[in-house]
Image 1 (cartoon, helix red, strand yellow):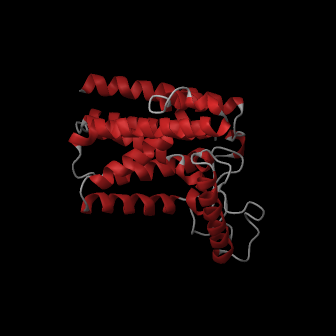
Image 2: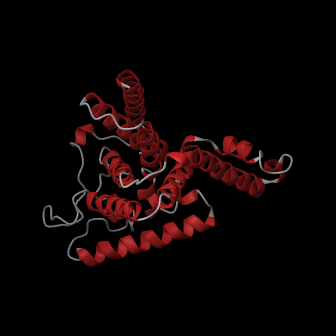
Length: 269
């Protein structure tokens, strides 16, 4: 799926879960709904850090591309070391490897949840800020982010060239994240539940890719047909290609579910 589709799935899934909890009589506080949705949206992009050309890999130009390259090499090495006998994934490198597994989502979610539970709220705020920064890259165009960046930069900085435009866009994304964090800072407490948002965002990404023809090794390290990295997904007749009209239909259905979740939350509150 495309980066924007992944981001939407993360945010909508958290809103839908919050709405169901509210209907069941366990309405979460507003800060948990808003911050959790932001974290799930941003973290739904994170698994593609194993691909140097992904949305998340382009957020900071060469810096994040290098990081994505390193993650891809590490994921490819793990694929080869943990299942030497099979050919599954050969030629794919590290893409759709360990970062696209349910276990990977669980481990990252647990790590974030423990850190947020054992430390002061600043860790949770950093998690929220990083997630909003990632979400801004998916939700806002480069031109929009550059216009926001111009609020802090002298003159029409983004018109001085391609490099200046990218810098202004990066500043704009940081500004969006900073404003969001500042708005919820006074409400920060023990945010252990951010681990749930991180887990869901990463898992939502993998579930989304499981709808495509490539599928994902969601159940690693369990062996399926003798291989730990066997891609699993929906029945082949239900799968679609990334960026196809079928994905557009899925996006509109998710958007409708998101609107319905917000309306339901408003009615319960």
